[in-house]
Length: 114
Length: 110
Image 1 (cartoon, rainbow over the protein chains, first blue to last red):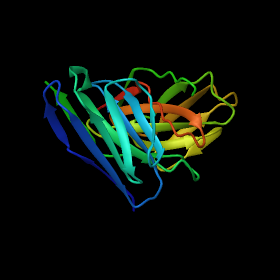
Image 2 (image 1 turned 90 degrees about the vertical axis):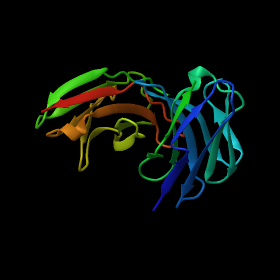
Image 3 (image 1 turned 60 degrees about the vertical axis):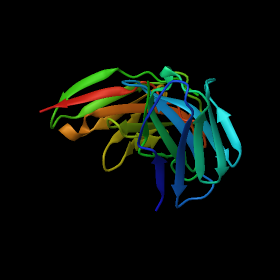
């Protein structure tokens, strides 16, 4: 069966510090991978998605970046965090094929920027 | 991708049937309609997906009229554990991008 991992679960960082969030998927190959951010009480904002190794599409211009160094690994980074980067970060995967195009989410990382 | 519009919130009582309607006036011919459920501090979870008429699974039904400009998620006999945010998404079958709006916050009362 497929599983998706994210770490860390929670993170408190000062403004201006770097960020690295990691997401890995097990039990599938060549998945589409996604990073979302959810501010408190709001909907999900799509940040990045990737259809393959080294292929990253950015949805929102910001101080964040994403990389996909391996087929099932997706990393979200920042060189300098802003207060507005606080939120709940979710990684997800989908196959983009088959009878139902379903997206599967990880447990999330709660980031607080102080 | 077609924009979707949902009510911000709804209240219901345990045991009632709940219908949440989503408007998607600009839906394209090859677009599917998908609904997700999200509990606090968790990622969304797939509920149901459909293209036209009616789709039913073990947890919900999805009703789509002939013009497909709206859809209705029906939850039979809700319980307190159905309190969550419900999102309606529209996209082509092999779409790679998923846009979640603000969703509908369903509050089930005892």
